[in-house]
Length: 263
Image 1 (tube, rainbow, N blue to C red):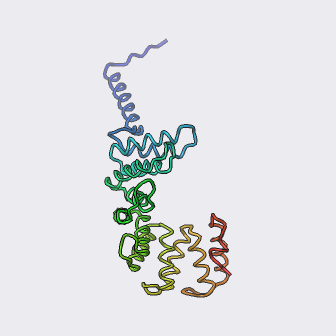
Image 2: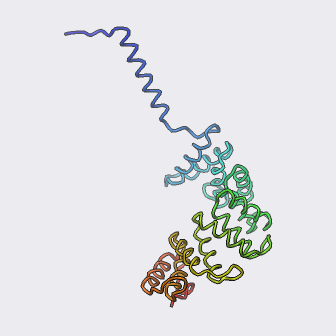
């Protein structure tokens, strides 16, 4: 039997290669959630939320809490919503408002908007529409489409701000551009009616189309009515019927015929 003896130089090279491989594997391992890795906490929290195993939601709460404490604005947003809704933790609107405030200060537009919604509705916090408006504006400026839509609602109703339909339309448009379906519908309805903004049926139809593409049943129904009557679009009964059917299929409350009054 032959015996092979490795020379010292080859042995050193093999050991170095093994060490390099181990370090490479270690560098490719996911970063653990911790106070020095807030993004990892957001990643872990999101993964836990998608799981159905017992205790997963509670682990998501823990991950988001660690991430929020470490400076992850979106972790604060997620944690605030779980506190508000009582998912994986006892519902606590006051704590939710505090956590949303931290997320908003850290730059989460969604956290600003959700804090604003708490103040507008007076859910476990004293109602304050003026504060809500400021928070919706900050959320919108930070890129949260729902914040733009909520601000548009205030300008339309005159709550906490001076009523201003053109400003409402502008904010609804921003919300629609950010893919918030309800904002598309609200902008479309303003332009269809023309109240204080000037009627523009073609633009209204385009906004309804965008809202329908984003699964809003009211937009689908409104656009169907426009195709049925040939307003702002070329009359097309077949397309109208298809849009009415889509509206009904998306109407989770099963009230489509009463709401849209299609025929």
